[in-house]
Length: 312
Image (tube, rainbow, N blue to C red):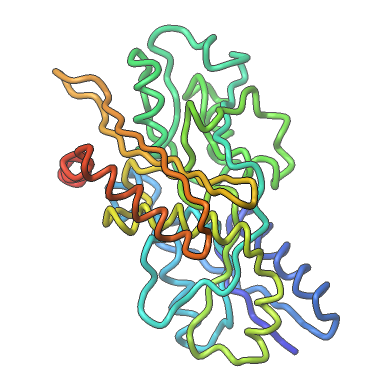
């Protein structure tokens, strides 16, 4: 049984696709996974922050076109790179394999975030991370950094930055965990929706046989958490390039969801963060929990913050 997996060609994306290929083979030894490597517009446009060129959705459009064209059956994504709303006809058939959700502080010179000197240059192209960093340390200078993980670390080691903020999961998957000097708890740096999780996307025309094969990799607990987180972005009409964060956790009976929106500082105003916490015992519709968080954020003024971010 052949199954073709569309993937970006960055080292991390290839690791993720190869991991899913191995899991599919494990689930069904008769499965013959093949990778279709692709370069997306998000990989090509490296001179500007993602928020200026269309958001992280630029990383998935070519992969979706490959599925529409029949060149691939499924696509593997870092869940945090997916837009809140998928195009008509596409769906997430499996979500799981969630690693460390935390943001990581990486620096060759400083052992922790607290040790950064006044005016230190920190690399991140994420508005979500930037807002939370400046809320803690208004003195920092944020500088965009694009490219794959290796490229970013090369720029750090060349002295272009004092530190980088990266996803811990990505570093660990590339066996670069030793570069992490500190892991930020969600209370200090709330992750992006779906951070650390992998999602498998397909088109509605995928055969029932392949649906059964891929569906075996679905983790319902992780998927419920991710659904709640992604519902925050959907409820705010926000894509993953905007300063929105959400993280769900729970003990199996209760789910807790933290969500925030933030605004970068201006000449007259400091960084602003609006954060909410919601919880529910009825886990039959976790997306409703995300929608409640989005409504609470809107009541706290999230719309004006997001409008300003879009305008900027």
